[in-house]
Image (cartoon, rainbow, N blue to C red; front, side):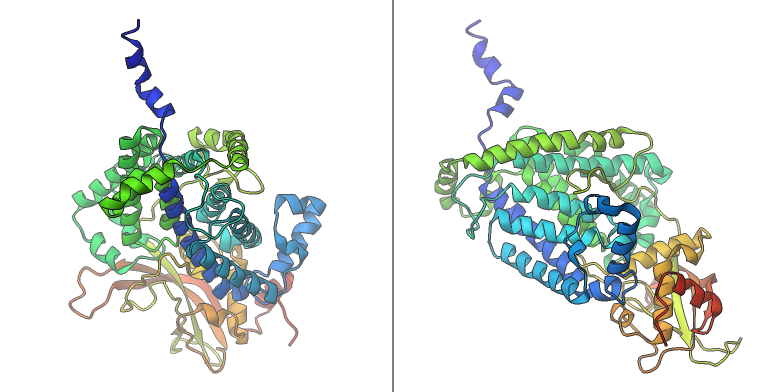
Length: 521
C-alpha cells in the first residue's frame, strides 16, 4: 500500500488539483486585449450612436424607452437595465461613448482596477440594452460576460499593470468555462442547422457571402475545394474537440490555447467580423499560465520573475468574491448548458437581465448566394425608363464592383451589417415593412437630413436631396479574375425591393407617422 501511495498522489486528476501555476502575465494579457476590444467598441459607438440611436436617429433611444416603460411599467428597469433610464439626450449618449473610449484607453495603458472594469461593463451594458437591432449581435453580450469576469480579476483600486496581489485562479477557470461555451456552442449550432457543415462545403460559399469580406477573402474563396473542406474539418476540430483540453494539465492547456488563438487569428485574416474574434481570444488566453507567457521574455529574467509571482499573496476579499462569483456562474450556467445540448438550440441568447452567463453561436446557416439591397436616388421630377439612378454606398458593403473590399476589423460599421441581413431577407421574399429603421433611413435621405449621411461612404446628392429613392436587389459574386478590369465583384440586378418613393408618397408618410418620425415641415 505504501508503495502505491506516491503513484496515487501523482495521478492526473491529483496533479490538476495541486496545480500551483501563477497567472500574473495571463491577467496582464487578458486585461490589455479586453481593453483594446472595449476601445474599438466604444469608438464605433461614439462615431455612430447619434445617427443610429439619437433623437433624430434611425431608432431613437428615447422613443424605445418610453414604449418599453409603457408596456412593462416599473419592471422595465430590471428587464432592461441601463443608465439611460435616467435620460437619453443626444449629448449624453455621445459623451457616454467618449467616456468609454477614455476608460478603455486607461485600461489599455495599464490601469488594473476592479472599479475601472466595473465602470466599463456598466457603461457598455447601458448602451447594449438600448441599442435595439443595431446591438443585437452575439458579441455584445459576449463582451458583457467577459467584462464582468474582468471585474473580479483585478484589485479594487490600482494603476499598476502587474498588481501586488496574485491573480485569482477561480476567475481564470471561469474564463476557460466561457471560451468552452463559446466554441462548443458555435460547433453544435453549425452541425445541427446547416448540412454544408456536415458535408464540408460551407467554405465554398461562406468567404463570398459573409457580411463584410476583406481582400484576402477573394483569394481564399478561389482556393480548391479540398482546401475549403480541410478548413471546415479544422473548424470542427477546434470548436468541438479542443475546448475540452482547456481544463486539462499544463501542456494540454497550452496546446489548446495555442490552437484556439491561432484559429481566431485565421478568422480575423479571412473576414471582418467586428471584434468577435479578438474578443474570443481574451478568454482563450486563460489557457496559458505565466510559464507560457514568460517564454516571450529574455531567458535570464524568467526565473526571478516567476519566483516573484509565486510569492505574491492572495487578497482575501478578492478570493472570497471570486468564489462567490463561481457559485453565481454555476447557477446561471444551467440555462445555457441545457440550451447548448438541446436539439432546439438557440444562438446568442441571454438568460439573465445582466447578461452574466449566455449561450453563443455563429453562422449556424451559410448563404449560398450573396444578395445586396442597394439604395438609389434621382432628382428627376418623374422617374421613367430613361431615369439615371445614382447609388448610395456604405463603407464596407460591396457597392461598386471595382471598389476593393474593406479591411476594418475590429471596428464595426453597424448599418453595413444590418443591410447584410436585409439582403438575405429580401432574397427570401421578406417585405421591407419588417425593417422600419430602413424605411426611416429612406425618409431621412429624401428629406436631406444630415444624420444618415455620416453613415455613408458615398452620398450622390451632397448638396440637395433626391426627389425619389428606390431599392434594388442585386446578386453579387466574386470575379474569377481581376486582370481584365480590376473588378472584385460581378453583379446583376435580380429584382426591386422598394418601389420609387418621394416625400409626397401617402403610404410612406403614413408609415413614418405611425412611428412618430413625421417631423413638421
